[in-house]
Amino acid sequence: MPIELQFAIGGLVAGAFGALLGLGGGILLVPLLTLGFGLPLPAAVGTSLVCVIATSTGGAAVNVSAGRADVRLGIGLAAGTVIGAFTGAIVAGFLPERLLAGLFAVLLAYTTVAMLRGLRRRGADAADEAVDPTVPDGPDAPAYRGVRLPWALGGSFLAGNVSGLLGIGGGAVTVPLVHLVMQAPMRVAVTTSNYIIGITGAAGAYAYLFRGDIDPRQAAPVVLGVVAGAAIGARFGSRIRSTWLVILFAVVLAYVAVEMAQRALGLG
Amino acid sequence: MRTDRPEQLGRTIALVLRLGTLGAVIGLAAGFGLGLLGGEPGPGPTPLVTAIVDGGPDALMAAGLLILTLTPPAALAAAGIVLYRAGERRRAVVAGLVVFLLAASLGVAALIGQSI
Image 1 (cartoon, rainbow over the protein chains, first blue to last red):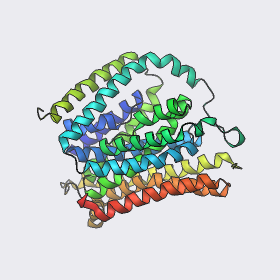
Image 2 (image 1 turned 180 degrees about the horizontal axis):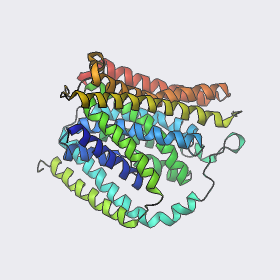
Image 3 (image 1 turned 60 degrees about the vertical axis):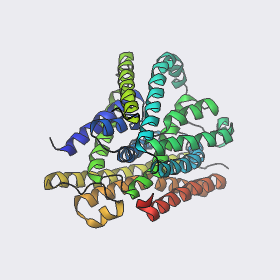
Image 4 (image 1 turned 135 degrees about the horizontal axis):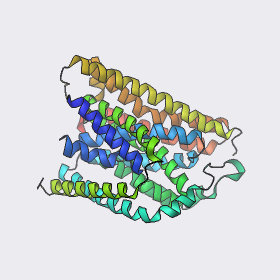
């Protein structure tokens, strides 16, 4: 099978599982492209950022037009993520690959733990989702927009930095930031984060694109696969919400974290 | 500070995002398809502008990638215009600032290219 088709299938699987599990594609794609396809880490991170934009624009178009994402809040926080993402992408060009692999291993370990802990919170999230998901505006504008704004901007810089450095969307930072720090409803936090990560991904992707890290022949099939996979995952996501799937995937992520750590230590 | 037609903001952003994604996917798919038919190995990682100037399937894919990365800033610029027209000047300025930051990122990346 041509390698381009293998890239497309890899993207399809990562996009589908990302949508099914509520993860950004980056956390799955970067290890797949580096450990599975042997791409250098900067190439994998750059390609992943382009995929992050693709999944964000597709999902955000739906959420924004339905009024589920708080666009005004998102635009404000994007100021922090954009500066953070570009800075992270520039810094990534100077860091040794083993250090980046080590940072990614830590991120994978964190995501694994967060996924398993999230199993316990499902009841609370379900109750939150039962609330009217649309964001009011005008005189009824939500009060959380101004809550702890300096903290939120600082946190969004961090989210952008992690995104530009490691090729993920940064939702792992922005969702808790909007939900826990700014006290917005969980659903608003998730949809607003989805809108922001496309803007963040663009800021990071420019550095990788113009540095020549991204090969169009590798990136194009991966992006197309991720877009198709995300659509499939979103379609079946409401039907497949099994606990075992989350546990299975947490095991896979933990294994990948060990592989990445071995690479960072020069053992892989 | 009130948008007369609040839903217009969401509709405008969604339209730009959908058009951008569609344009990017068309470019990527056309380039990918032509590349598969051609069967020649690609030149490997190439700076974006070089790939576009060189032509062929790689140019289509590189253009698709560029369109994709320009879609969020384009939607943001459109949002800024809607907010400005609706009298939400402060939020329009914030949107303009983020667009400026993205343009600066693009400009710096394009200028220093392979040296970063």
